[in-house]
Length: 143
Image (cartoon, rainbow, N blue to C red; front, top):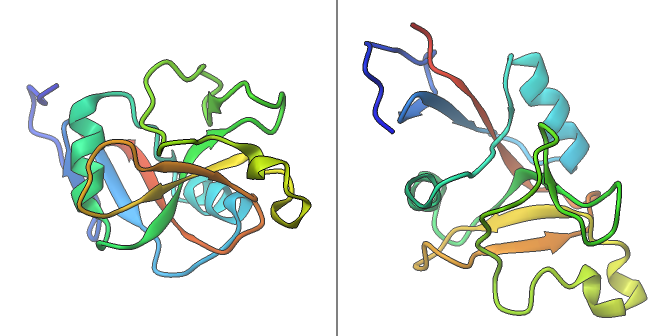
């Protein structure tokens, strides 16, 4: 989707389509990222198109991991975006989500992370929400 009108993003944010994106400079838990985005008038990134998935794959540094706004914390196996919409389009890594494969050392893997690398597809993974990662905020571009 292209923006029909001239829209802008705040300084330091990157625009794609009609949205602005900001990668955190620090690491924190999923809930920390969620709160930081809220304080910026945004939310953890919601990926809802192939084009956005491809953009996001080039947005973060290769080999890095970052939180996205996807969780199954309310009901195991029922993945929802931060805005409450159900997951309909996904790009999970092979074998994911696996909730830690039942291994107690991994705990409950209820939050989704994005692996940036050479692949633009199939690079999501579920992980423990209390793992320190960077995150990306998303908000509508200003008119």
